[in-house]
Each structure stands twice: as C-alpha cells, then as structure tokens.
Image (cartoon, rainbow, N blue to C red; front, side):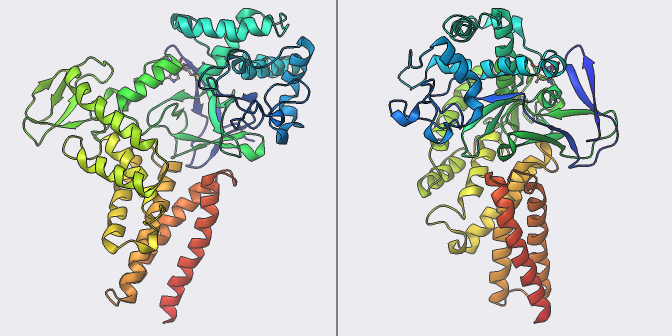
Length: 495
Ligand SMILES: C[S@@+](CC[C@H](N)C(=O)[O-])C[C@H]1O[C@@H](n2cnc3c(N)ncnc32)[C@H](O)[C@@H]1O
C-alpha cells in the first residue's frame, strides 16, 4: 500500500500523523492488523477468546487444559494458546476474588500478557511500533488506587503466581499504560466488546471534529482501515476522535482527561457555542430568547452567560439543572429499544424542549434514538405510521444530520445511519401521495430521486463496514432497497 501519511512531532501532541499528499474523502490512509487484542478492563467474566459473558460454574465454560474461562466453541482457538501455556506451566488457577458483579481481577492480566508474549514473538515490530507509544506513567501514578490495583492484579500477579519474572514490573506497567492510552474498543463478530492495539492508527492525534474514521473488521482478524472522512490537503494533520462526538464539551473533556490524560484544545472545545451549534447551551430563563453558554469551556467551574441579556449564572446552578436531566435520560437510554422506550424518549424530548437549546446534545441524542425506533419497534413499523409521523421522522433525521454535518462531516458512519433512516419515510410518503393522486409524476420523480440519492450516499459509506457488522448488513439491505427504488422510478417513466 502506498504510504500517504507521515509522522510528525509536537511538544503538546507528541507524535501525530499528517497527509503526505492531497487526499480525497474515503482514501484509505492506514490498513493494519492489531499487535494484540483481548478483553477490556473491568469486564465481568467472559470467554477469553470470543469475549461473551460466561457462566464460569458450567463445566463447558473452562478451557480443558488450563481451566481458565473459555467457552466450548472456542476451545480450539489459538488466540488463547499463549496464556494457556503460561497458566499451565505455572499451575495458576482461575477464580480468585470474584466480586458481586461477577468480575474477577485475574482477567485484568490477559490483554497485557498477550502484548508481552507478542513482544517476544515479534521483537522487531515491538521496537518499531509499540516501544515509541505514549503511556503517561507519571499521570497514571497520580490515580493511586487504580495504579495500585494494576500493580497487584497485573504486574505482581504475572511475575508471582504466573512465574513470569522475565518481564520487569516496569515493563508490565508500561504495557498497561500503552493499552489504556492507545487501545481502541472493537466488537467481536458476536457483538461483544474487546480492545485492540493498533500501533500505526494510534499515532493519530485526537480532534473533536475528526477528519478520519476507523473501521475494524472482526471477520478479518480485527484488521483496521483508517479512511479520510473529507478531502484533506497535503501536510494537513490527520485526526481521529477518541471520544463520542455527540457528547457535550464537558463530557468529552472529562473522558479525554480520565482516559487519555490530556485537555483537548481543538477549535470546537475552545468555542463556547461549539462551532455555532450551541450543543451544550441552555435557553435563558431570564430573557427567554437568548442561549446560556459557559464562558470558558475548558474550565468546569467557569460561569455561564446569556448571549442576549448577558445575565451570568454560576456553574453550580447549571449543574443542578443538567445533572438530574442526565440521570433521567440515562435510565431511559438503558432500556432496550421498545414501544415503551420510544414513549419515554418522546416524553423527555418534549419535557426538556423549553430548557435546552434545540440542538443541545441531550436533545440530539434523544432524537437520534427516536429516528432508530420510529419504523422499527413494535406498533411503530414504518408502513403503519401515519403521514404526520413519517414527516416527523424526516424532521428528526434532518436535525440529527444538521449536527453531524458540523461534528462528523463527510463519510461518517453516524451520517450514513441517519441518511438510512431518512430514505424510508421520504420514499414512503412520496409513494403514498402519488398513489392517492395528490402529487403528479414530475413531483413523484423528484421526491423519489431525493430518497434514492440519500440512500445511495448511505450505502456508499456503509459498504466500507465489515459485512458481518450491523452497519455492513444495513449496506446489503440498503442496496436491495436502492434497486427497488430505481425500479419504481423506471415504472413512472413507463406509465
Ligand atoms: C493514542 S496516543 C497518540 C499518539 C501519541 N501522541 C504518541 O506520541 O504516541 C494519545 C496521546 O497523544 C496525546 N494527544 C493526542 N491528541 C491530543 C490532543 N488533541 N491534544 C493534546 N494531546 C493529544 C496525548 O498525550 C494522548 O494521551
């Protein structure tokens, strides 16, 4: 593959990637296999291979050789063979200290151990790609409780009961840090979370408006492809997002500070309006027409101010408004998609309409789940929805897209999913109106044309996804729907 990115260095960012030539949206910048993959930290007891939660008391849930948790379907997988040999040689049994949430501290050692064993197998790849990785030793030591837990559960456990004193305590703790700062979450083919270390991809710096996106292919040994979302000029920096782009600034900052040990100072984070979206802003209670935003988005204790009447509100008052809303939303978002969740989501969306800016992240996230539920959940199937609800779903999708066009522009998965949700009601309403002779063939053709172009864009993006992932499946279904829409278009011309 042609090398189209170079590694630069900056005092603040450390290593970063930049484009070696002008890139077009969709260009593949990196295509690599992980150095190692394994269970996430803090998970309940899972199969060490497929990462599905496992009932360890069952006899089929134990590797026949080392007795660590491996489901019967995975007994022959060589993903587990390295650590299996270590546990057998050391006679290290599994099952100590399982807590009330079915988590076992012994599981914490698996992914670091896989990295260490890989280092021995591929020392040259380690030296070239993993050795230079950031691991924030000093900052991690500041989180004393976590540091000590890692020291005991991972470093001392591997060097003691697992008899791996050939790895120094310092090296093991470094690997723990490398994983924490650099690993990405992926999903197994069965949809369970797993973490993977991709040394090339991890070089890229973070930005809250990324210009690249990563796609992991579980069905191809967790290969990753990093593509540009938009056109990128030669020498421009390449950025990924380490965090959820549809969170507000305070939430993104907290995630980056706790997990990656830095303060993001990107244009979006430094702008109280988040690039004019007012994504974290509230409606002013005093003048009722202005929006209140934080004065300094990088300081949690900063006062907030209305952009119209200029009244100033302390952060404590804003938190007292937002915290209970977020708690209430979290309860609803934990429910599985259902008619009940749809109704509860609608209730919250209406309830906070007078408090939050129309594009506020809480409203946007509620809207995004509504777009997924209208047309899918029982009692709200697309063909049963009245025209007014179809129009409503169209409005919801357009509002979500308005935000995504700012924060995840171009060929992003989230945009593709929103476009996919949009095509259905567009096509259905056009079809219904034409059948009832409420629009003529010319308008029908133009409305169908819009649905086709929306779906075509969604399919083009989703075709880059793993064919076994939910998005990959959507691409296949979408392609068939495109054929049908094109057939309907031809039928208008024939009649
Ligand atoms: C995944 S690593 C990126 C590669 C890293 N710079 C290196 O040299 O190995 C993540 C770390 O890079 C730095 N970093 C990435 N994006 C940053 C940003 N936008 N602002 C400040 N530091 C950033 C932080 O130290 C962060 O913990």
